[in-house]
Image 1 (cartoon, rainbow, N blue to C red):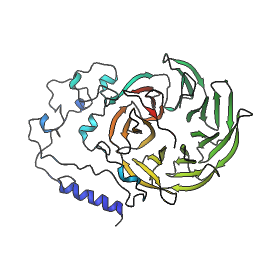
Image 2 (tube, helix red, strand yellow):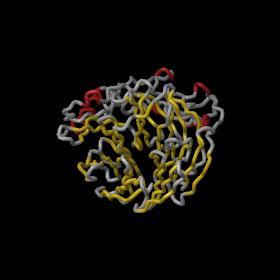
Image 3 (cartoon, rainbow, N blue to C red):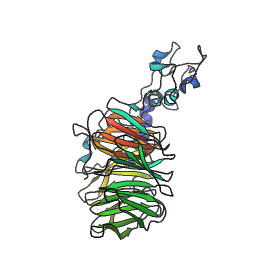
Image 4 (cartoon, rainbow, N blue to C red):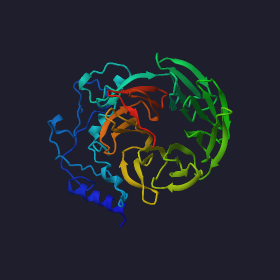
Amino acid sequence: MDMESMERNGNKRIFQRLGGGPSSTSSYSRPKVCHFWLAGRCTKNPCSYLHSDPSDSSSTSMAAPPKRIHQNLTYRRNPNPNPNGHSSNWGRGQGGGVVGASRASLKEKVCNFWMAGKKCAYGEKCKYLHSWSVGDEISLLTRLEGHQKAITGIALPSGSDKLYSGSKDGSVRVWDCQSGQCATVVNMGAEVGCLISEGPWVLVGIPNSIKVWNTQTVTEMSLSGPAGQVYAMAASNGMLFAGTQDGNILVWRFSPAGNCFEPAASLKGHSLAVVSLVVGANRLYSSSMDNTIKVWDLGTLQCIQTLTDHTSVVMSVLCWDQFLLSCSLDQTIKIWAATESGNLEVTYTHKEEHGLLSLSGMNDAQAKPVLLCSCNDNIIRLYDLPSFADRGKLISKEEVRALQLGPGGLFFSGDGTGELRVWRWSANTTEVPPA
């Protein structure tokens, strides 16, 4: 029997032994909870249904069933950990893993009345959040509205006092960092697939092209060559990489003499669209809708390894220290480390309840690394590394695909409604340095 089957069957036996599972029966009849109360909008008093969670024995005087014990058995370790010992500290926090209780899920939902700017009759006693965040370290500074569709990229060019955001509504908005007002709206004529900055350059990926602006010299240019939408870009050591809809990665080299980008190569290997790129340790890492990650040598621009452990689209890759982190719609974050042979292997897998969309990382004021991971339940989860201890949650109206770090503990998120949010840590943070 393989390790995964052993874990799955073993967990089932433990769960049933502790009173859970489909074979468990009980003689009590579970009282019904008011659906309107669950949605935060019941106006009946008294109401014929419960205004409490029946799983909480203290909230009702009715006969309650015996409490079930749910073990947190959600982490999966590689049966053959990295021989260099990198995996020893991963996942030892108390806050990581899948939240199994429905009551915990309630605390991650924002009250509909509060969200709509209306008065909630329950006030502080409301079962739902009257806040966009969970945790004492994070606060929402402001919400910048203007985009009509999902935000796909956020950038803060060096030496500029402007914040740039790109959207599926076909526009790039330029925000004044002092006033928080939108200074300029640039119509791109097509959906923006991604947006990044490198030094003073702002680069915008659209179907079949990349638009490039220099914020210092006001230089503009267009890079042709992509086939279909440009979903991901990365820049390092004078090279620009663009992942496209047809699965190719196009490469340009920057020419200081001509102050322009010159075509250098086309990296072929992925069978479906490339959706994330990151550069670290003289390697380019690309993730794709074909469920794989490819490792490219920056010196030769050749693929030296293909990682196939994910079972769905690999949405984001991130370099941290000597590790590669990846997240997928298969509801996992995988930690990769190099073996003695130099190849990457999974040294730890963190499981979530929902598909994952984006990763970002920073160091807090104590130089402790913090991972930000956006899930498709509209929540950004924050974890200490390597323990995966819970550091908080940020809640949006729709799923977040764009995350960007800023100075002084600031960071930005863009959701599916087109809303751009500015967050701040109570203690200053610094960006995780490149590998």
